[in-house]
Length: 177
Image (cartoon, rainbow, N blue to C red; front, side, top):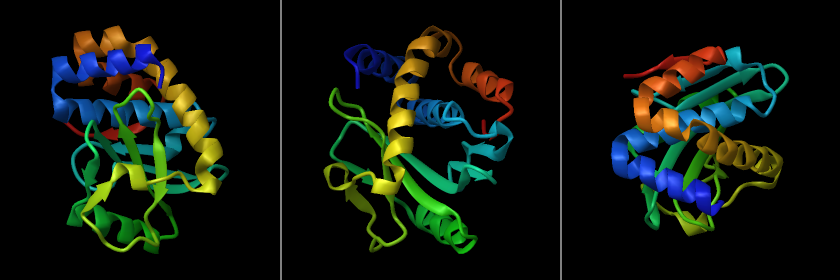
């Protein structure tokens, strides 16, 4: 992660709070995925309940993504997260845990949780991006940094409303506060 992106993310978290910060990162991740070249009407972002990002695109694939951000060493997966993975995995979606540790040396990790033993506290340093997702992860990380820089002022000034508008402009379905 570039120093400028790291500093901007820390300022957003400080000004808007940890809960909103997680949702902001989730929305920026959805926009980063959209920039990777899929049909954006096939993307749905959920900021209330369930799996956070659903992608159902004939060319891109089917993904159910749970998003977690942390500045610590662990992330917590709840029963609802595992139930969501089970639900979408049964519908032939690729189930991914997307994790961003806010650190100068960190990027988005796209971890496959389908074969993992159910564990509620996961050590971030033990998670890795599976080979089949590395190209997508590289694209997402590049797009994410660019989007943080481009949207920083708008996020600070308008918060979640700003990103809701950006998602709508891209025709991404959005449910949330």
